[in-house]
Length: 124
Image (cartoon, rainbow, N blue to C red; front, side, top):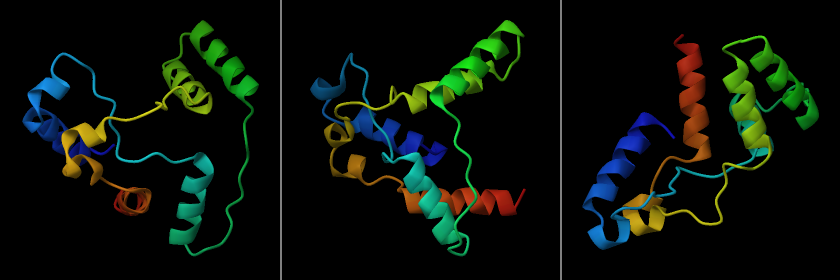
């Protein structure tokens, strides 16, 4: 989620029906996608050619994560996040965007997120 989306959804949560949001964690996101959908969108927006892709097995990620923690590397957290994402642990059975009203569903989409990422890279 971009900072803009986080801010927008925070404001919507504060303005939503207080009985629906009080004293609970809200599971909200801009959109849900897969790594292959992200890859396809990047390929589409960068000329349509297929990218050369290498896949890392979940077991290899676990091994790299374990070694990074053993070696005291700061990158260990990145391996942990990749493992959690690969295991699908960041997905929820349902999300709470709808509790925030119609505007809670109108957030960023994959196409716009990739546009912003490409623009940021071009401006770096």
